[in-house]
Image (cartoon, rainbow, N blue to C red):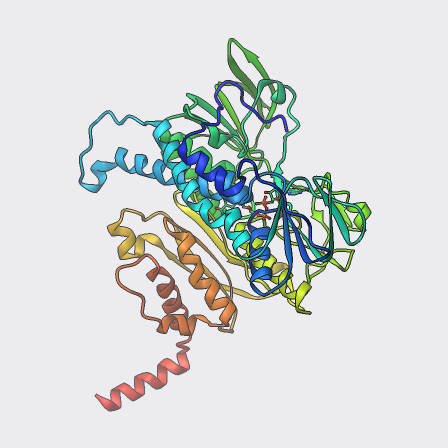
Length: 509
Ligand SMILES: Cc1cc2nc3c(=O)[nH]c(=O)nc-3n(C[C@H](O)[C@H](O)[C@H](O)COP(=O)(O)OP(=O)(O)OC[C@H]3O[C@@H](n4cnc5c(N)ncnc54)[C@H](O)[C@@H]3O)c2cc1C
């Protein structure tokens, strides 16, 4: 993939990087001799592949795992882990700049040591890589092969010249960044998630193309490190799937951070002049050109289906949506299943994990678990973070489900006030006249943690009546959920019930 930004990107090779490498792709690794036939062959050693291989081997299956690059896949190496590590430091810098607001003093001239930020990130990544290491796989009896897997038939594949036969296989080859078709972009050089974490120097000026989760998270982080950051999003709001008021709060937060927000804006051409990248932007009829040192794209993901010779295996796929699976995650070849980004619409680490567990049960134990039965939360880790689970109001309306929404602004929550984290809300949608939670959106500093309580309630079939009875430790931001549940309880007090209560209390007093 031509994604290198030659001017600013160099992958360092320090001790921590060597530790990660030793864990996820040791030098001098020799693939084992294949077993006669495997119960399960897993293609791809990202989250989905690792979870399935560990689970199946622990249960006694003979398992092989094939990885063409690094174990841990995107999440560990170029996704969740490095992004969350640098976001944490960027938040600290933002708080230091606002120190006076918290009654604290810091030197006026706060200097960002970007190399140190990235060194900390590499350190964290190396530590977490121990959990994804080849040694842990081998310890549970998994045969690990490094190399590109390619099907040679409906029950066999090759890797590095060896043939592996299987009873069942799972394709967990993940996804990669989409390259936007902007003339001059490839020639100018650009960053994606695959190389942005190799940077050792902060670009002075950065254009982020794409206002999805990746673009939003990294634009805010780089701006907070001190890069002059512009974010161009072709839609009228960021995170187009989220509720409009949530996305609006994010736009406002970006403006406060000093990000130059360009909505309804497309990048149409890139050229290099005097060592800088000139990008032509078009918003409706307005044309402008920005000069930057780095361009980061976050315009979507494409599934990794190429190079597998899926036709030889009789597996249906398409280049946009990936491997075609039924509700049991089975492909058109009944022996072969798929999990994670390679086949799912919701491309998250936790869905890769959950789908891999479904595959292990369905493929090896005659299970009939359905992917459609999963309740999937997600979160974009901006500041404030935006988390969601279940239905949006528009989706409920499309399905003719009557909805009632209970909203608590974070400025009504004591802990949010104490923490100066009042931007946001908890919004819980319930089915009208039924104590059934349909979905929720949370915008808050800790939205990613808070959404788990709603997810638990939905999975367990718990309604707001019960949530109102749950004692929440005071003061916590999650009290907003209890407040929403209390608001729901108040609606249960009909005029008839109120009348009876009044009579009871008057006679009693
Ligand atoms: C910047 C960024 C931040 C993210 N942040 C979050 C987050 O905060 N929370 C969250 O839930 N999700 C996040 N994600 C998404 C998450 O990383 C992915 O959903 C997750 O990694 C998918 O796991 P997977 O196992 O399906 O695929 P991957 O992790 O992509 O693993 C697939 C593996 O298959 C290998 N492979 C591919 N083809 C072959 C082949 N032919 N032969 C052998 N091996 C092959 C690849 O080398 C790769 O290692 C983020 C993603 C990015 C890019």
